[in-house]
Amino acid sequence: MSQTAMATIDRRPFVARLLQLCPDALVVTGLGSPTYDVFAAGDSPNHFYLWGAMGGSTALALGLALAQPGRSVLAITGDGEQLMGIGSLATAGAQQPPNLTLVVLDNGHFGETGMQRSHSSLGTRLSHVAKACGIELSSELHHAEEVDALAARINARTGLTFAQVLVKSDELPRALPSRDGVHVKNRFREALGFPA
Image (tube, rainbow, N blue to C red; front, side, top):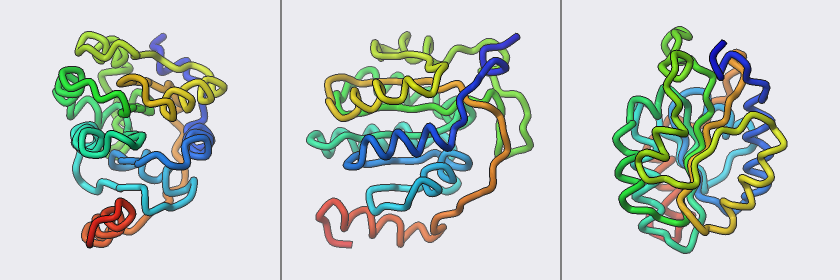
């Protein structure tokens, strides 16, 4: 049985708790379920929702972390999206921004294209891949209670972190933020103190 088949974490309460514990973090979401989960937990100008940019969340969050070294930056994405942008882990590992945390909600499936099994349910251990890319603070989370320690690390900004969160593959109702990319961008820029 694969590691994702044994997952016990309900992703939406996990994400809600993580965001509650990290209220000042700048959050970048991967497309699909991570975006729905972050929005369901409460919208914020500090949330940058990616629509149709599969594979781009880690790279965008990396650039943001380098540009905003005094802020905690959190990418919340899924296993399929992270697999699509796997090279960005190597770039993050080379840059090592201590304020960046990558959270992969891993249900072992490509949820946005019909729930086909992803590589993570077929043997790929994303936390091991991240470690091989130089992200030493890389781990698999198997229990919802581990969210508190993860949040403490995010808030401390003491090292590039990767967390593969093994979540159930439940299909949850979609919570849809604005799909207006210009609005999302301008709102985020204003939250950072820049003109829209």
